[in-house]
Length: 140
Image (cartoon, rainbow, N blue to C red; front, side, top):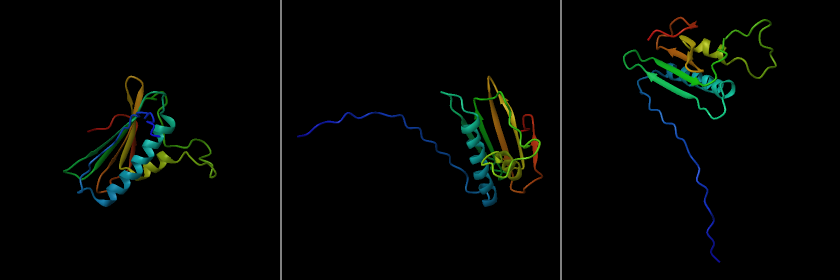
């Protein structure tokens, strides 16, 4: 006996990003870690039911640097890298992501994304410039 089984259709989203192969390995390695941390934060802390987050990677062909932006819809509370009084307990499984971003990025910050979101961004240059956290919008 031959029976036709109903097939359910599902929506599949695919993300593809082509990056220049001229980015130095040290920049690429740092970019991978920073992108993972910022995206994980968007999923864990920036989630709003029914709304997505966005990842943007920009490669500056002239300088060989990379800019990473992760935008999520939850902008009421902007993140800070400082663990607060008493630090982060050693047995805590989370809470170190932005400390890692601050250590790996040359510059990073968080800015509002109207109407209700935020964008966490980080910049990495091939020279490993002095690291800084900038609370406001970056200079482009």
